[in-house]
Image (cartoon, rainbow, N blue to C red; front, top):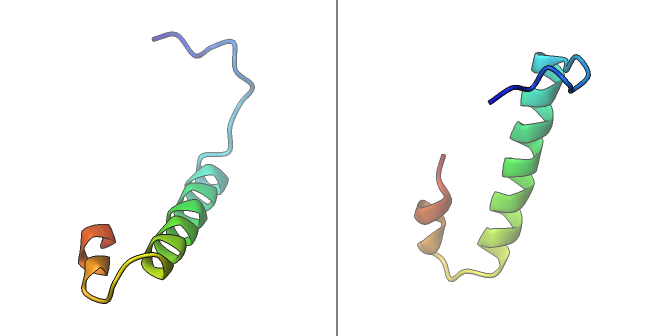
Length: 43
């Protein structure tokens, strides 16, 4: 897949953003699950 039309992306910054998003998702998921279910979201 050609991605050359996209602007240059700072890979490190992108990884950080993705990591933060995953962490946020895990926190929210844990709020709505019963204890013990968080194993499903372990990365």
